[in-house]
Image (cartoon, rainbow, N blue to C red; front, side, top):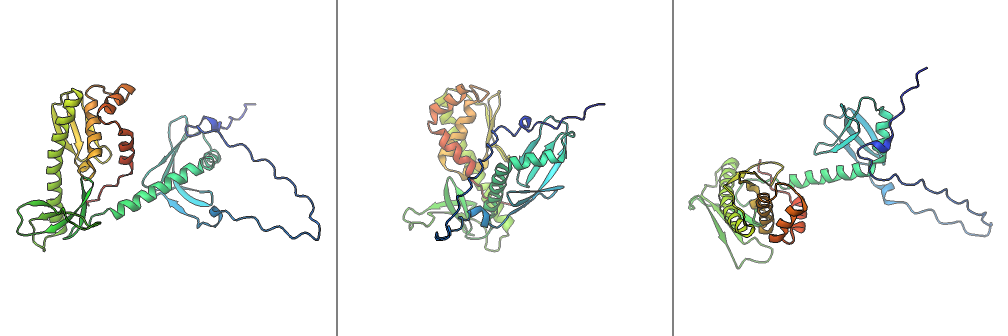
Length: 305
């Protein structure tokens, strides 16, 4: 008789790189308490046990599982691969699993990685909340970040185009920069957005050109072309022919962040990889690049649409 196929070993799953925790030792049996001894106080209640259970639901969910008392609705896809893969994105949790892995084994894997999954889901939810708060309400008096500072948009029909004004004597906590946009107070949100975005892109090109010239000289490289990008997931890119592309939205960030991205892309003209030699080149002009790079991951750009 043919032997039934063995269940997959969870240790072979791609996300099971951490050692499984050891089973807890059995609790000792308490000694009998004399009648005259006061009853012990009740055990402390953990914070996790009183927190309101959360629900995380993927819009295309076809399976549900409860992880640490929290309900997670996820998308299960059967794919041609050898391992189980977990992906936590903006929409929620997706699980890619081979056809021969049973649902019980998949849910066992989910339970084992429950802490990691919940942490990532909460991070995505917090990021979505911050993005919602960063949505720009295009009107007179709205605020946008520029080079790490807050700029107040002022509708000013007397202005030609858009003019940045700085007040060196502004009060503490009050933005010192105002952008006077040559539009009437009856301008639509789209008109205001387009005027401000056009100004930001002009500033981005001017600033990027200055920083590229500076860092190209310091690194001893030559770039052939600089263009602006509107990519959703990349700050910049470099090609072997010397072309540099920088995301114009970098202009919202501080100069150290811009300098790091510029130096990063120009360093690729010496090493088209991320080898230790490449990072040494970056470090030669941006010594604290690790700190700046970690900050980039936390930055939330204003949402224009």
